[in-house]
Structures are given as structure tokens and as C-alpha cells.
Image (tube, rainbow, N blue to C red):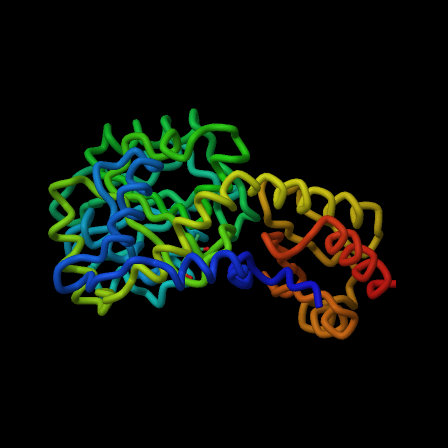
Length: 339
Ligand SMILES: Cc1ncc(COP(=O)(O)O)c(C=O)c1O
């Protein structure tokens, strides 16, 4: 089975499991876990933030970031198809008392004009915005990237409007690799930054939130309230440190594999692939009779797993556990299955 459903399906390698087994641990809630602290310091360096905190999931780290940068009864400006809008169980409303102000974009990419375009003239009759969130890469848009100039421009628009920025960087590693800059370059000016370790890097669990030094205590408090305080978390942090040492530099291979997959199906009349910028390929089914609901089980029966992203759209994601040969075989199976 070639599993292209997500870059979260990777299994920890034998070497990663060894690093986990040998991790030095403490009690991170009680008085600190040394391996977790090493990871947080390393992540803060990579993101260019003053500090960082380890979380069990990207959702919890995102929600903590949003709680830090917003106030109840205000609006969070965010691209209309962001993960924060569709896949976090209305968390910003439930947990932070914040309303989402979706910013429609043609292809998932925010611009300063689109951001300023949703700002209402101040009035006692309308809600105030309190923050902006940027998703980079943008999952629903097919892993598209805001490069350094685009990020700077959006940050400047937010700054001019007095809005702090949260970066949902679940796949920030991919964005940075795609535009050949260090991850910190895509976070310049952000107040909080979430990065995942369980996507693309091959870890079983984990995300981090980059924060300012003076926000750490409050971030800790929110994480504890959400049930995210972990004890011997060094076992998980060790996997992340292993991944940063061994898997970060190869992430561009996933992008090349995604491009290869798209190329290999591009001349098939029943399918229109996106042009991948990173590790996600969207495959649109062009024939009337083909639907995601019908095609996905047919592909799975032949050995390729993908997920639906709309009635006639499939998403395929390349990752650490699929090789170039797997991708070539997947393309052949897709072609054969679609006839
Ligand atoms: C863009 C984006 N943000 C946040 C998350 C949430 O991460 P997690 O699944 O670890 O909660 C995801 C997960 O798919 C994501 O794609």
C-alpha cells in the first residue's frame, strides 16, 4: 500500500525509536524535562522566536497561540479556507471567545490588499479585529507557499492595522525549503508561531509554539488548562530532536516526488493535477462520472491511498515513507484505475 493520505502517516524509524528509548527525561509539569527543554530551545532558534513550548498537537499549539494574540469578543482575521477555519472544531470560538473573519483569496494566498480589504472602518457598531493568522504552507490550497517578500508584506499590513500575527506553520519546514530560506525568515514579525514535528519530519507526536519570552508563562497556563501538560515528554521530544538532525534537510525530496507524481499523470485526460509547490498534489477528476467517493476506494483496492478534498478533488501528500519508486508506481496505478 502506498499511503499518500497525509504526511502524518509516517512511522518512527528504528533509529528514531532508539533515540526515544534512550532519552533523558524528567517531569515536565512538575519541574522540567531536560530533553523537552533542549527541543524548545532548538525550535526557538530555528523560528527566531525568544522561546518555545512543546505541545502534543498542532491544534492545541494553534489554539494557544490564538488565545495569546486575541481577546474575547473580537475577530481573528484568517484566510477563508485555513485549517483554523475548517478543522479545529470552532476552537477559536469555543476556547478564545473569538469570531473568525474569513478572508477570501483566489488561491489561498493572503496579500496586504486582501488583509486591509476586510478591515472595517472603526465604529461602535462593529466588532474589532484583534489578530491575523497566516497558514504557511496552505494545506487546502495544495501546499502553496507565501515566500519571504509576501510574508513581509502581509506582516506590514497587519502591523499597520495594529494586529499581532500568529503563524500556523504546520508545514513551515516545507515552505522554507521550497523558497530556500531558513524557517525563521518566514516568521519575521510574528507574535506566535506553530510548527509541527509530526508532519513531514516523521515524528509520532508533537508540535511547538514559538513565543516571546514574556508570553511563556501565559502560554504554559493555557496549555495546562487545555490538558497539554505532559510528564516524561522527553521521550517525544527526543524523536523531534532526532528528526531535526536527520529528516529536516531531506524535506525537498518530498517536493520533488510530488512534482514527479503530478508530471506522471498530467497528460491523462481524466485527471488534472495541481502544480505542486511543496509536498501536496491536488488531483481534480475531470470526467463527469468520476467522483472522489467512487475513485478513492478503487485506488485503494489497487494499492494507493489518497483523501477527498471536495466531490471531485483528491489530495495526495508525499512524505518520508514514500520513495521515488513508490510515487512512480502510484502514478501508474492512478492512470490504470482511471482507464
Ligand atoms: C495547516 C495545519 N494546521 C494545523 C494542523 C493541526 O495539527 P494536528 O493534527 O497536530 O493537531 C494541521 C494538521 O493537519 C494542518 O495541516
